[in-house]
Amino acid sequence: MWQLLYQNLEQTVSVILFCIGFTILLLQRNLIRKIIGLNIMDTAIYLFLASMGYISGRKAPIIAEGVTEAAAYINPIPSGLVLTGIVVAVSFTGIMLALTIRLYRRYHTLNIDEIALLAKGEDA
Image (cartoon, rainbow, N blue to C red; front, top):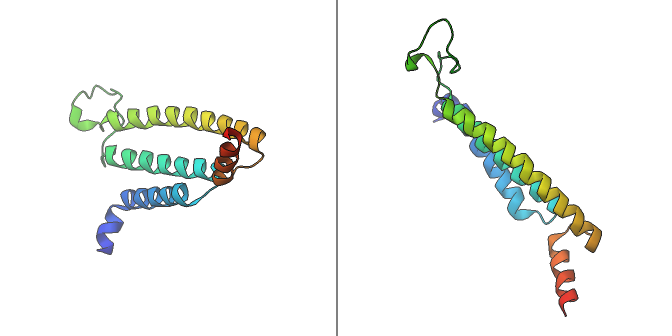
């Protein structure tokens, strides 16, 4: 069993990172910590995609030295997905941090339970 985990080390680490991020997302009440947990989960997914797209002994998909066979290159789709995901994650993190700043300025706390209670008190 340990040999199988070691052979798939990148996938194992990505699953562990995803579980850590998911646990942080579920158990923390602080909004900044929730955003950090979400970013850890994103990183785990990017690591998983990059590790699945890599093929040992092959090159990046840039035609050089006249080699045009597809068997000489790695699959470029996981790399493209990772790059796109990073751009989306940075944008999403920026928006979430901006909204967190707005919530803090209004309620003077980052605890999501306290914010919910204060918001209910404003509605009444």
